[in-house]
Image (cartoon, rainbow, N blue to C red; front, side, top):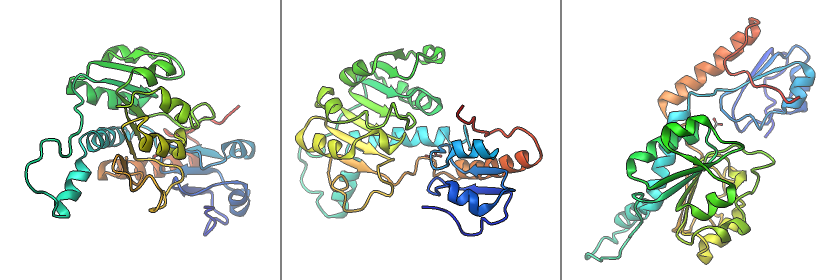
Length: 287
Ligand SMILES: O=CC(=O)O
């Protein structure tokens, strides 16, 4: 949604991930507008090409939510793999009865092959946290191989290998024209039927209708989504009521530590730009 209210005559705008900042908003703000600071890592809601044309700086809040998002990704994986939400709901509904050996059985992370799509700061944080679970192999795919991957014993593989070999895939990448809907029915068909897909990157990386079909037809076993397409995902969306799909409301960075740091960084970015300094979160505009 466009964020119009109160923008007129301002030198700086501080916005959230859900505030679309386009030419209309910039026109409404006026020619004096110098900086648009988003309190998020992602900045796909801001028309950065237009900002570049107009000489408006764009800033984000990098680094400060890496740990919170990486922690949530691991949490979401455990929720999904071990059916923890189903277990909790069963207790609340009074369904905890006699011991049943196969009831609410999930899978362990131990000895599994974990694939990470996008070994940036968050992907690296997830990989580092998953190693102590005793996983057998750590593979990743990104635009290129990263030297830091050696520190955690992660091997670069082609996308095809990532989807075919992984027992667990964590999507930690940005949404770009290259990553848009790369998880679609063709991809799901190549994945293991036991595979678990976790997405804490961007919803648009996954084709949601295809994911629903893959989860109901058994192409893959389960999914955990902290990001969806669209957001918010309507409560009556078919994915919401699947037992093998855990949907969270994009809450990866919802910790006091991250939120405090994000708000400080977003404000400091504005002050830096207005004072003629390079802000820590200055986003490089497209050429
Ligand atoms: O997704 C959250 C962010 O971009 O900060």
